[in-house]
Amino acid sequence: MSKDNFSLDEIMRIAKASQSQKPEDMLGAIKEKLPDDKVSEIQRVLKDKKALEQLLNSEQAQRIMNRFKK
Image (cartoon, rainbow, N blue to C red; front, side, top):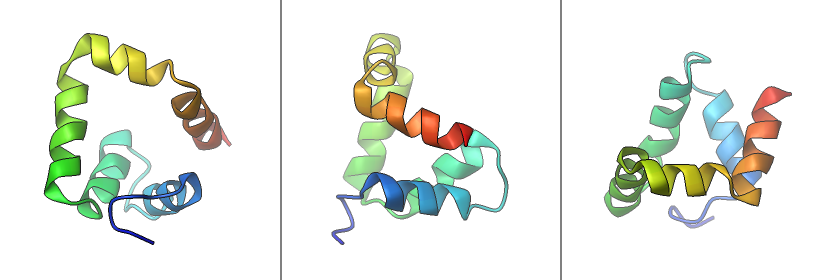
């Protein structure tokens, strides 16, 4: 799999393999696997309230959040 194109299952596997269940640690585990430009994009979205709300309301984000609840 390309380093910059993860499937939902791969993202979940990486996040769940982190050392703790804290969201920031899970995000850190995912970011370690991404190229710098993708990490920069994540940081930009996390700092932009409107972009973050749009992302969190997307269908894909909802599916990911539901998988974390399991």
